[in-house]
Image (tube, rainbow, N blue to C red; front, side, top):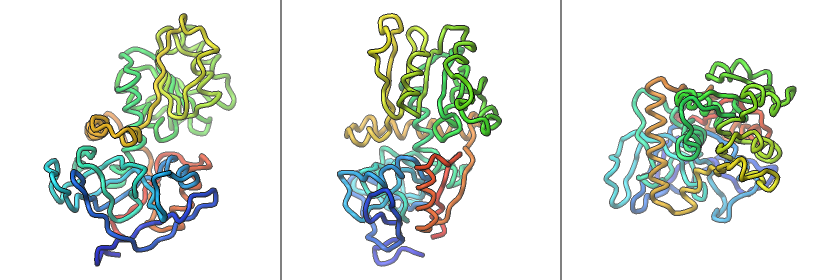
Length: 337
């Protein structure tokens, strides 16, 4: 399925709603504006945000819309003023969710937000990194900034963000307490977790208290929100820091003068929504740093389920994201399309 006559193949969402389905069709080939690169997408990873937006939509979208914030591929065309890349270079990026995304043969992104992909990294692995790995790295290095020897609690450690965060935290010299289901204990231990707690069958607060001898943890990375985030706020030691992906806990129920917590909200997409060029450029820097961790062996890719570039398969995979049935990463292979 080649690109001809200024058109491309894409998976289209006709309307956002709970029973959403995608359809494959031809659509206009996007033309890069000033400062943008057009990327021939070789692989695109699926993320919970894609599935949630397929239900709720976005105010900036027009329909049909192309989903997808994670993509890796080859620079195909340059917008005016782009000097950072040349046609033919390998890149990955976290693409803005308000614009047509990566479940297509081609997508646009600002050149200053993209990272070069070494030849040693295959397309599926490259595509699996932006949303999950950059979120974990942003939380650890831009927000929490814990020191070697300190202790962190990582919730949902078998998920995409959690799986990368465990490895990165160990690389940074932290002691890792992780939560997941019993079935995933061996996997999370293999990522480097020092302690793994079955959140379904054990009292997480009591277990963390025992592990830390009542001192609490220095940091929390929470990807669950709600009651879990509220409980974890109480597990921080004095001066502890908490990074949240869903929502921030309510501090009115703790003595903030005694705990003095630092609370951080993590959002890669905020770099686009805010219009901050510095934040967008940091997406590229974080991509470079994560790729360096990967190629040096400091972290490894999460297990990848490869999906064909077909509407039915990708629709089913997105509904699996909503149901919380995904371990590792789902990656759509578009290279052969």
